[in-house]
Length: 314
Image (cartoon, rainbow, N blue to C red; front, side, top):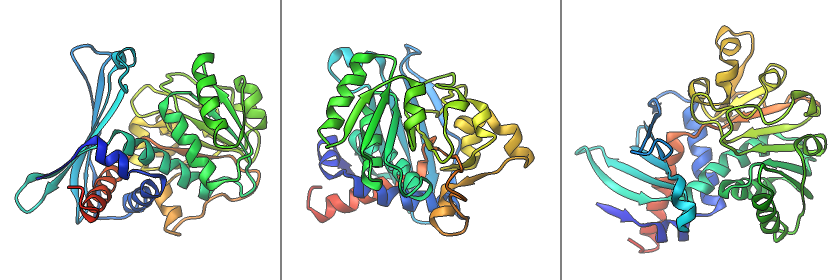
């Protein structure tokens, strides 16, 4: 059995590897023969400590990812999030590879956002609004900077101290950064990324200007919500996997309209493969909902293993 500890996976993780895994996974999710099972969401003895299990199979891969969020870790100087990927040897039904992948998971999550922005945002998009200022928000912003000529970033967050910390990290990337309110950010932004744990809309639908692209990265459980429902009914909708988004993603708040066929939601993989169109016009509002794909974790794990073997690290 192969074991890749966090120190090695963090050394190997980068934007390019995350993008490769995300593109393979998103396309696979839109094609037959690849399966993702319902997400298991659970908690520790203290209900505020949560973990989830995402699992799936492709003709070549089978496995799962366990992701956790332990609330008190910040006070201990430890990351609140952790991630571990397990890959099966399908010939004998045993775990073949265990990968601690907390930093790699941050790149993995942001890569889906980057692909959505690359294919759905206007080509001239240059102003980014980020809602949330946790650790993942930094990676999401970096992902957008890699695919669009962003000149200005607006940060919206409940806690000014966290917002200012993120602002300083992003200024080091050579962009202008301001900490502002939600309405001000939305009236200027061409791309909006929400990366929070919110259970109610973060802003008013009327504040979003025509031509905006939104990537919603925070809703991954029943009851979570970042967008106003009325925005979903007038936008072009894309997600990593429609079935999962309707259950635990942002589109749970437009599920009736989507299931009835009165509004359409597409898998982003259909756009990446060329099977479906992306943005229809410059004034369209596009939304990408990411609730996190098990297949992303499997492809990420396989690529990390391949690279670790190539470099003789395991």
